[in-house]
Image (cartoon, rainbow, N blue to C red):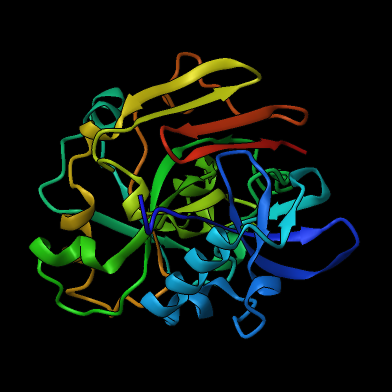
Amino acid sequence: MRGALRLVRFRGAAGGGPRLGLEEAPGGDLVDLNAAEPALPLSMREFLELGPRGLELAQRALESGQHRVARGATRLLAPVGDPEKLICVGLNYRDHCEEQGARVPKEPIIFSKFPSAITGPFDDIVLPQDSTEVDWEVELAAVIGKRGRHIEESAALEHVVGFTVANDVSARDWQLRNGRQWLLGKTFDTFCPLGPALVTREAVKDPHNLWIRCSINGRPMQDSSTHHLVFGVPALIAWVSRFVTLVPGDILLTGTPAGVGFFRKPPVFLKPGDEVQCEIEELGTICNRVV
């Protein structure tokens, strides 16, 4: 489908700064967008600010058959590394509410991470010295492509450029400290692995009907569907935009399903050497080692 793109950021084998690219297919070789279109910015946020024109240039580069880069000669980075806002939603899957005995919220529960928490799709998750209860949360992330405030729910998806996979890594001990403000427990460095690609809206049949999974060392921990979201992406965008202006590059993590470590009996937390794999249908897989 024209307009169906898998946007990435990467570094070449020789190092250098981040570059924009496209996956030809999930897990396939890349197209170097900055080589194909030298006038394009190196920042994904600045690229998204170009709007439809930027996506047209990316489509042209994909169709040209040129400027290919072997996947093995690159290191993938988080598709958006410098968002203005990294917005999160709590208690947004019914089964996640049930596993902790919480009521299903009547309004979205909004919190945030600092953008400095973002790390790449295959980079390490670094356990902080100040926490012994680090947990996983696979999440569907929506990326804003069009500026808006007081966005109507019926038009909200027009403001989404695409989707990616996120892991809302969480220090549960700190989530329950500091007056139960969640920010500190959510925003340690490397606590938001993101990727592997920003998959444009045209390439996703239905963001509210995708299976979503997380495994630790190959053991399934979370296995659900975005069908079980309490508040879908349009409702979340309409709600958040009542309070803040959403701009291109903003990231909205939409919540996690049941199966986190904290509510297991006994609780299970991440330890050095663990491998965390998060996967969402049509979007791809991220895999992060815990150190």
